[in-house]
Image 1 (cartoon, rainbow, N blue to C red):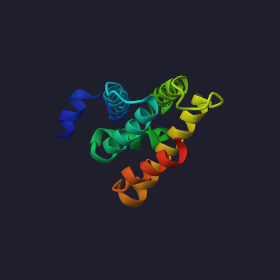
Image 2 (image 1 turned 180 degrees about the vertical axis):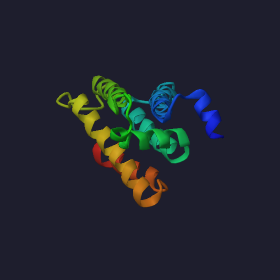
Image 3 (image 1 turned 30 degrees about the vertical axis):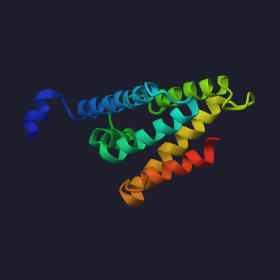
Amino acid sequence: MTKGAVYFHFANKEALAVAVAEEFYALLPAIAETVRTEPIAPLDAVAELLIRTATAFRDNRMIQAGARLQIERHLVEAAMPTPFTEYTHLIADLLAQAQSDGQLPASSDPQAMARVVVAAFFGGQHISWVLHDRKDLAERVREIIDVILP
């Protein structure tokens, strides 16, 4: 694509960055929706969501670009979407359902668990990206699932 074609659609680099970040945050709930249509238990749905998200981080250029922009958000002179909150809510909702279904102890805190899972996932994907170009991301996410989720 030529520079002229890009600037025909976007006023400047910041507008392009915001559009990519917004698409990134639209794709994550879309992945979650594919999991919600599966006839699986909520705790299994959390694991499946993490695996499918890892696959998207490994294979989808828009996801990769959005993730990079979130890391570099301090360099973008425009209002970027708030990172991680919606994904955390998606995980928390599934964990709360798992708790209601008896898959988690009543003493569990689905909100706290969701924050830990999301922090582990996004940290793990970043480390996998830096060290192995995300080639080992599925394995790292499987480790997160095995260690954090009962």
